[in-house]
Image (cartoon, rainbow, N blue to C red; front, side):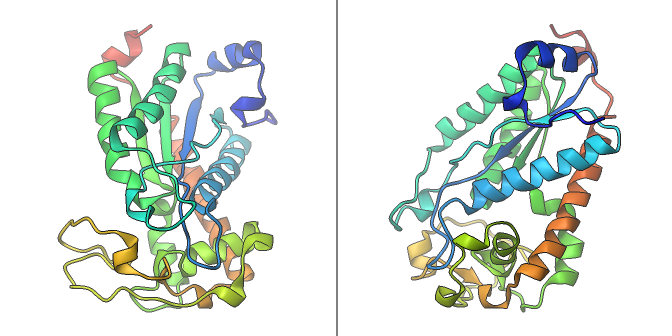
Length: 267
């Protein structure tokens, strides 16, 4: 199986033929926001698309029919708007955009839609969207962030203490060094850990017990939360390979999920 996984590069007759094989459709979702002094605004969208396309190619090579849409490049980022260049959608608009992409795919016959996220601020909205899509439109959608499938691997990979993996951090900087080193300014990287109550989540692998909104200007003058100085390209390549493998395994599994009666009969 050697078909291009990028839906945007298919013709409509090719999509029509692909639909007869009941493929998985993947929607990568990112954000357009500050990532400190050393990383560009495109990090979340770039990594979501990069990991999804690589994982889809791996899953396809193992026998899964799958395509990936272009990445939704901006997301829900009001907490980053204190830094120039950041772009945000409001919660209703973001959910509507991603929802309309999913509903368009479903209208053509895609029956399993994976929404894979690259920005923490999007996740609550995407989770809620999967319920709306199913209960109101009969569409089977699954949602996760690309790192969710490799949390145990990430815990073993990290060199930082708790607080070192959050935003523009050890993980994101390493992944960018592995994929777009030309856009990383390591001479500008500086560690900044979050100094707040332990009830407030300060690390990707150690979420807090209490949810509370805050601006990034309030949390970090530089826009960084984490330990980017520990990142290297070599370590980023190893982590990326693991994340791609874990996500590909999920795609293959998702392709086998049974569909409910409403989904089976929907036209």
